[in-house]
Image (tube, rainbow, N blue to C red; front, side):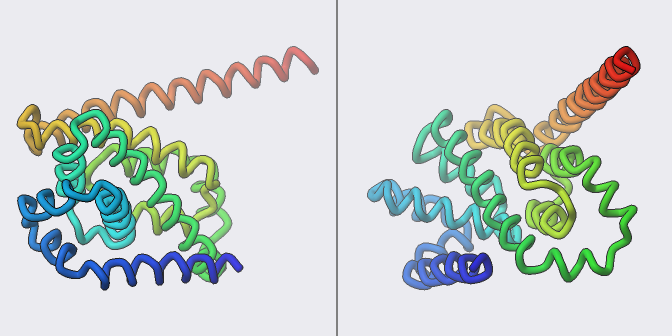
Amino acid sequence: MKKILTLLVLLIVITFIGLNSELFTMIWNSDLESVIAILTENLLLTFIVTFILMIVQNSFTVIPLILLLTINVTIFGFTFGYLWSWLTSVAASGVIFYGVRHWFQALILRKMGNDWQESVMDHGFMYVFTGRIFPFIPTSLINLAAGVSSVTYKDFLMATALGNLIYFFFLSLIPYGLLSIEMNQYTLIVIGFLLLVFILLFKRFKKKKNLTFLNKNR
């Protein structure tokens, strides 16, 4: 049933792209002026197209993420465009993660050692969060690696939501000329590093606190 559902979603996406091939060709060619002019006239089409583009981007990373955010913030404005981009990115990542897990996980995990599985399970949140916050790893690879690992669905979605919330904010500033791509990368490195240190210290403190509590109750 799960595989049938995955195939159905894939079929719907492919059919929609086929029916709107001219529009998607414009997007592929980065003809933003024509794309925005068409989408502005039909908000429902805009919601559907941008969501499907996010699914494609999370599947193969053939469409630059900055292009999708530029379309969203230009049509919807900064706040709603940013939030819509973030929301669709989390949903699209969840769809891809779900599909990969139910199609390929069992096959690949049989070839992996138990140590690798336990390591990913213990640090699943950090694996995904680090990949989201640093713009050096393609989104599709993060989804694939997480899907075939033992990362829980909850940790995957939480790490994706938090990482993309930060990363997309800076990307959304670029179309307004408030931030360059080069500045975006350096800023994210600093912020990502600080967040990682904070999360690691918090987890260490929480673990130490739990150990103290257990020792007191022995």
